Amino acid sequence: MIVQNLIRSTLVGMGILACMGTLLAYGNAPAAEAGDSIAQSVDYFPDTIGTRWQYRGQISEGPIQTIENKYFTNVSSVTGTRTLKGGLTVTVFHDTNPGNHGPSDSFYRRDAAGIVYYGSEPGTPLEKQLVPYQIIRFPMTVSQSFQQFNRTDIDFGNDIDGDGTNEHVDVEGHSTVLSRESITVPAGTYTDAIRVEARMTLRIRLSSVDRTAVGTDVMTAWFAKGVGLVKYVERQELAALKDDRGNITDITEELEEVDVKSAPSLQGRSEPAPQGLLADDTRGHKLFQVLFSTGFRTHPR
Image (cartoon, rainbow, N blue to C red):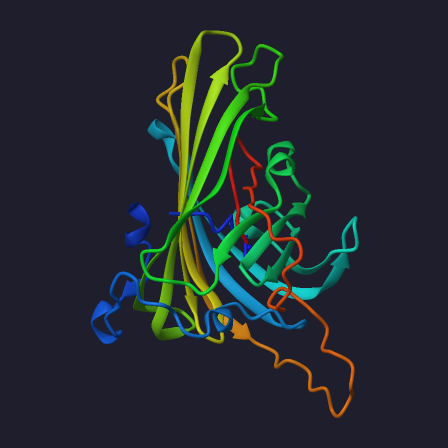
């Protein structure tokens, strides 16, 4: 999903979502001050093949005057690895229905600098122009923020003003480690979760008129040590076009069940363990991008 379609969109930032049933208990977690480094940051992102997460979700979307609520289930699992062009090996995450948008596969790799997102299938024209990009930096540090991407005048991949020509867009994204805190979801209470925000801004230049429409995507994701993503909330907003009042999409997914597989033992073998998302590897360290499927939707998972 980022995405896990951070991130999982994109991880990448994000209310009315606070009213959707999740209880946040901030008093039980150790205080984390700005600059605190998160020990063993990699342990918050398990990727052993066979690991499985089940999420329940809610999505509210539509023009501001006619918001529609929907409910859905998404199962995310680590299904294997894939070799990309150039010989780079990535870990494959399969989601059955991330953000209520149908099945998809997403590709990730961890190097010495963090986790890098390499796109998804099915992807979007916008996403393909942005990947690969980094979604998490190691070691994670509270209040740490970095620019994920900054691309100008690229093809948006959609004709949102209906004149037969795709719009062009400037896209900028930032990721910030906000805090350590306790969070309760259907799967249980996690007392030392890491809260990460990904924020993306799009400035879409309409081809039919001399005007720029501004869109934002803000996703907030919580990761628990040894578990991975336990919750994310995301809000996407697109400024009014022509006679409408603009579009808003709110999405939340909360962990219901999890089965984290242990890394396989070498059992005396001399060869190195297979490398996956969390394998130390300095190859392929690049900045990243966000996924869009409807309008300007992004998923960091």
